[in-house]
Length: 107
Image (cartoon, rainbow, N blue to C red; front, side, top):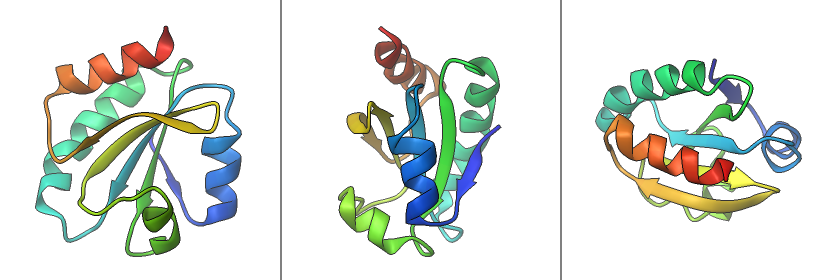
């Protein structure tokens, strides 16, 4: 399941303070490529359940988070580990590409 982040406090709690790596999907409702990525992110959240947490951040509602993490284009997909961005991709990509990102965060 992909949890939607509503504010900076929730982001800090669920992403920065998480014991697990966190896959963060920075998105917006109007973004076409997001519609292609979203089902893949949902699939991955089920496959990595218990190992990696999955969240999405609407950049229109959370502009301060987008700015803080230099999100200039969406979708931007990032993996946070121990409160730091360790991997990031901008734009649509393949499921395999995202799996490689996730797998590297688990080692």
